[in-house]
Length: 85
Image (cartoon, rainbow, N blue to C red; front, side):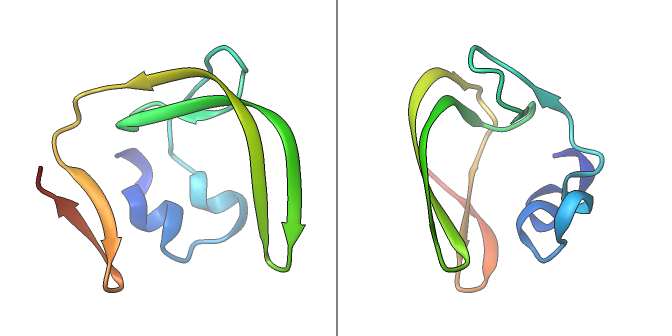
């Protein structure tokens, strides 16, 4: 993944800087989606419920795109690891 990969997106970099260098695409609902993600779900926002520091996003899937990206990635025991199928 360009721009530092999962560690950049989910590993502590905050705000607009966490997505610098990433390539984006849009599908039917026009949401910004990472272009090199193994799977993306384009959705229409139906409702957002804020609870403390998190938000619950409820939406309707408008389009799905997948690609063969090799191994899946999981976060387990405080680290990102490949998931062998």
